[in-house]
Image (cartoon, rainbow, N blue to C red; front, side):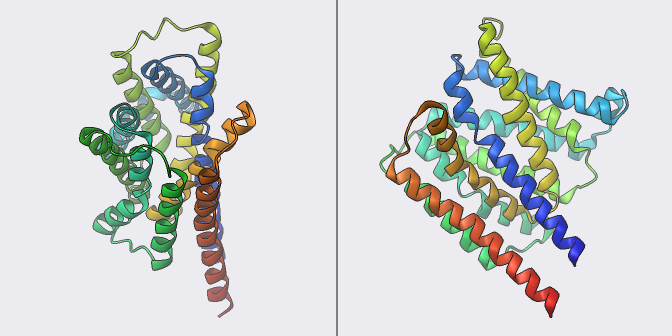
Length: 293
């Protein structure tokens, strides 16, 4: 029981840290003066390169063999993750930011459904209640924002949400997938698609350095931490923890650029934090009660 608890705590920590990494997206996009497709290309390129270096070390130089051992499910994981990256960008271009984030905030519920269908993994009422509270926090954060974008954009945002749910369930389901090559390939897939919509070589040197840091931290580090941590905890719980992105994203912008968050952002962020850490507190308390009994 203790070992299982320690593994779950580690899973919580790794997924929470992945949310921290992903929350820096707004910070980097404020600094980098390039169009979104160029950013996506270089983020994917440097993210994929980072994973390739990790794979080279892990496989002792047998990189091609490592990527070749992915198998059907590994390729499906890579394609799903890469599609999710593209869908996120596409949804932001086709509909409002508010639409995108509110639709994405439903990901724990969609993940719970997919996990039940594939794994027969049931989500507790406490987890679903915490997910509902986190969704309410996102809605509060985006109070006053413009909703009602295009139906196509809303569909693409839902597609992004579905890919995240599928990716999480695949990682939980097929734990023998070599996760580093699979997620590295997903970054290359995103870069390949973005290449056809931008001029990637018309980039200032300063921006290129920032794009390299962006790909290393926000893309590669975030995916790596999530890929490892989501295997240790229930699928819906993993996607609930990614909601930490909501209060953290404006924090980095505030610290870096002095852009003070509005009251709606502060209140909504507090609700999200209460939902996530309230769920963790409850689960830790329940685990200790079971251990004592």
